[in-house]
Amino acid sequence: MDYLEGVDTRGVAPTPQAVIALNALRGPLPPGPTSAEAVLHLLDTYGSPATVAKNNGRFFGFVNGGCLPAALAAGWLVSAWDQNAAFFVQSPTAITLEEIALEWVRDLLALPAGTGGAVVTGATMANFSALAAARHALCARAGWDVEADGLVGAPPITVVVGEEAHASVFKALSLLGLGRKRVVRVPVDGQGRMKADALPHLDDRTILCLQAGNVNTGAFDPGAAICPAARAAGAWIHVDGAFGLWAAVSPEYRKWTKGFEQADSWATDAHKWPNIGYDCGIALVREPAHLRAAMSMQASYLALGDHREPSDYNPELSRRARGVELWAGLRSLGRSGMAEIVERTSGHARRFAAGLKAAGFQILNDVVINQVLVSFGSPEQTLATIARLQAEGTCWCGSTIWQGQTAMRISVSSWATTQEDVDRSLAAMIKAAQG
Ligand SMILES: Cc1ncc(COP(=O)(O)O)c(C=O)c1O
Image (cartoon, rainbow, N blue to C red; front, side, top):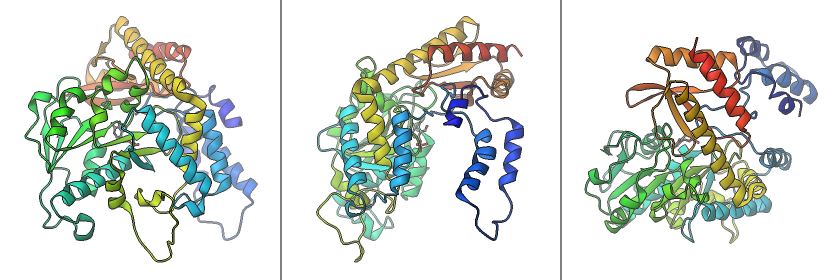
């Protein structure tokens, strides 16, 4: 509680001194025990000051939310319960809450009835899991058992991605033996959206990876223009919607997600826009049997009942009961609370863009949801502004290179960000740009 209460009055980034002081935690493991109180005291004395303050509403780096109070406290309970969420017999509570939460997510994202999935560590693993289901389905169609026989000698699969697909899609493809480079890349426009008229031939041996929410611009691939024909061609459509898919909850923003409901699989994160806290990714598959075929394992000691077992749908066996935090966070928000986060943070993004534009700086993207890209002049000027901003501490933003232009990224993803936070941060950004 001390930590959370103090988080608003300190700089967002830790001071260099606080980072150096972490060295006090190094050294050989003591030969004997230390009391739990003393261990916690060490953590709070040296660990807390060197954290990045994520819960004060002024961290705009990457696409990181905060942690909703209900999810945070549920996390404490999850640790106290010490449940292993692999099998129902190990934790009826964890498995039941995970099932309920997955159904809530399916409903919030307006995905087809019957869609099932897994609560994994993040969108990287969600992409991996969903694409493992795709790999299974396409190989099975061609009469090949990829789980048993691997990919050596398998019928070829073509993977189609947009030029601005997220790096985690390529990582997932490499882990699955489908290759980072062995993809067909579709050209994109200035916002990073796939050009629908530039798609290659698609058939039932193709995995088409679309994106709902580009990590830099927030832009969406045109799902409504692409999905019907891709589906008719028999391609497996996968959507990486790590944060953008949540726009489906808002009546104002759901236009961007149109068409994605026709996909076969989706990857998203509850630790991004829903603010559930780390780690909480979600893989969803229209026909969950494909995910099960890709993920289940057998061993004689794993004697199970009739219940749906998370381990059948998950890359992991033993795992934290992260579905409990998902349940708690979503229960606290309700549908309207989730929509409100999407709408409020996107409104904040527009306020940032308008304020920076009025101060004479160039906004590089169409601000369609919660992402803003701003240039403060030359690459050197932009990078120097970011360095001064991070050191000053009011807020935190990172850098990127968007289609050749160096930019500062502002991702407004936290439930805690207020208009006052935006205005304070805007003032700090303009001051940092002035040197
Ligand atoms: C579009 C997209 N996909 C995937 C990821 C990876 O998510 P995670 O860090 O949860 O693995 C991100 C992260 O920002 C993202 O924006």
